[in-house]
Each structure stands twice: as structure tokens, then as C-alpha cells.
Length: 237
Ligand SMILES: *[C@@H]1O[C@H](CO)[C@@H](O)[C@H](O)[C@H]1NC(C)=O
Ligand SMILES: *[C@@H]1O[C@H](CO)[C@@H](O)[C@H](O)[C@H]1NC(C)=O
Ligand SMILES: *[C@@H]1O[C@H](CO)[C@@H](O)[C@H](O)[C@H]1NC(C)=O
Ligand SMILES: *[C@@H]1O[C@H](CO)[C@@H](O)[C@H](O)[C@H]1NC(C)=O
Ligand SMILES: *[C@@H]1O[C@H](CO)[C@@H](O)[C@H](O)[C@H]1NC(C)=O
Image 1 (spheres, rainbow, N blue to C red):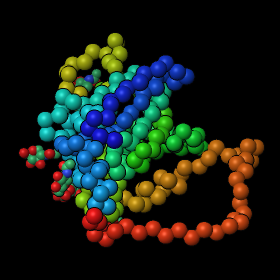
Image 2 (image 1 turned 135 degrees about the horizontal axis):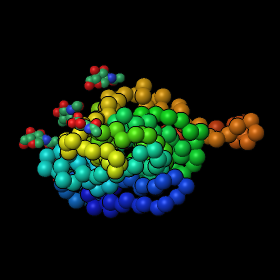
Image 3 (image 1 turned 60 degrees about the vertical axis):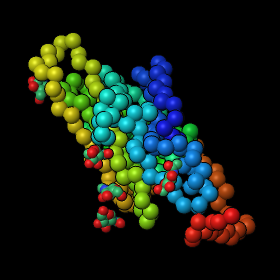
Image 4 (image 1 turned 180 degrees about the vertical axis):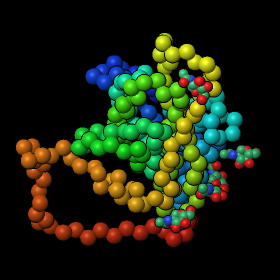
């Protein structure tokens, strides 16, 4: 949730090759506890953050943080399970790995009907599990994994992009003639791409099948009416 959030990379040998726990966070050049306390007091949005982070690292797209880049080193021809958490304060985030397809298998600790996508959308506090199949042959390239927000509101927000790097281990039979191999960047949806967001969330389906139906109640027996209002100006006490 903040600059002080821990950066965790958990590696466990599992049915898939590795399990990685990703934490997409947010960095404030301020005390994040004060930022949220002020937002709650005024009823306004929290101050705009200075960067997003992947496992606590802002990466090469911000000034001076190129050395603080999260790198995921992978082998060819494997399936990795990526466990993604959106630990940002208040932003929905698009996440994509250049030139790779992700298979969404779980959202918020519930299995979903697996589907493939180039980009996932994850809400603050949400978790998702993704399968990443690495390329069968050494691709002679590295790949950015990037995240930036989806936002449609009027207020200002941190519209920056965070990147980490997916790096393939060089197989022993490949002689690299140069250490400078291409870096491929993903194309993320526009910051306000509601059409992508809608299509993505429409793909989230339970594992229910004719053989194993999800027997949820389908008749409404009581209607409730809720109202909600935000103060139109900061509250004064
Ligand atoms: C948040 O932004 C307001 C307005 O710019 C500023 O007065 C306040 O100090 C900021 N809060 C923090 C914790 O930096
Ligand atoms: C990086 O620094 C330059 C020059 O100071 C500035 O114009 C630019 O906005 C900064 N970029 C970011 C992402 O902070
Ligand atoms: C990002 O936000 C800054 C400051 O609000 C603004 O100047 C800039 O045009 C925005 N960039 C994009 C791509 O929306
Ligand atoms: C990898 O790419 C670099 C830069 O494009 C090139 O110089 C090199 O020859 C390539 N290596 C292999 C093994 O294809
Ligand atoms: C998204 O933002 C662009 C400019 O940044 C604007 O031209 C476009 O109309 C917006 N789309 C929607 C659906 O709001």
C-alpha cells in the first residue's frame, strides 16, 4: 500500500516451475500514512503518488531508479505461476508482459475459467494468479513487464508507468555476440480504456459446468435500496 510496503519475491517449487509473488505498489515522497489520513479527513482523493513499483522497485522509466528494477529471470519452455497483488493505494492497474500471453486462472483466491490475455486489469487490494508460458527457444531479447493505471474520474492521478524486466537465462549452447540484446516493450491499453476494462471483467467466469453447476440462488425475495453521498467540499470540524 505504500513506500514502506515490503517487497516480497516468494519462490517455491510447485507443480509449476516457480511461484512468484508480485506486489504492484505505489511510492510517495511523503509518509503514506499521512497521505491516507488526509484523504480520509477531507473526503477527497489521496495525493498523487510519485511512482508505482513492482516488488518495491520503480524501475527504469523514472528518473534515477534504473538500478532499482525488478528482474524476473526465467528459463525457456517452462510454465510459471505469477501471483499478482495490486498493493497501490487507490488505483486500478493494467499489467502486461511484452510479447507474452498470460492465462488468468484465479482472481481473489477463486478459480476462474482460464482465459488468455496480453493485459490484465487488477483493482487495488485485489489478487490474481496468472500462468506465464515462456518461449520454447531463447528469444534473444528481454521483455518489459509494465503496469499503469486505468482511470476515468475527473481528479488527477499518477499516470506514470512502472516496469520490471523479464529476462531469459542464456542456454549454454548459445553464444551471445553482443550483450546488447533488444528490449521489447508491451503496449498497454489507454489510461481510460473502458472498453478493454469491460471486456476483461466480462471474461471472469466461475468454473461451473453442466456437470458441476454453481447453484446460486436465482430468485430475489427482498429488495433493498441503498443511497450514498460524498461531501462536495472538504468537511470542516
Ligand atoms: C498532499 O497535498 C497537499 C496539497 O498539495 C499538501 O498540502 C499536503 O502536504 C500533501 N500531503 C502530504 C502527506 O505530503
Ligand atoms: C525526470 O527529470 C526531468 C528533468 O528534471 C523532468 O523533466 C521529468 O519530468 C522527470 N521525469 C519523471 C518521470 O519524473
Ligand atoms: C499525466 O499527468 C500529468 C500531470 O497531471 C499531465 O501533465 C500529463 O499530460 C499526463 N499524461 C498523460 C499521458 O495523460
Ligand atoms: C541477438 O541480438 C543481437 C542484437 O540484435 C545480435 O547482435 C546478436 O547477433 C543476436 N544473437 C543471436 C544468438 O541471435
Ligand atoms: C480517452 O482519453 C483521450 C485523450 O487522452 C480522449 O481523446 C478520449 O476521448 C478518451 N476516451 C474516453 C472513452 O473517454
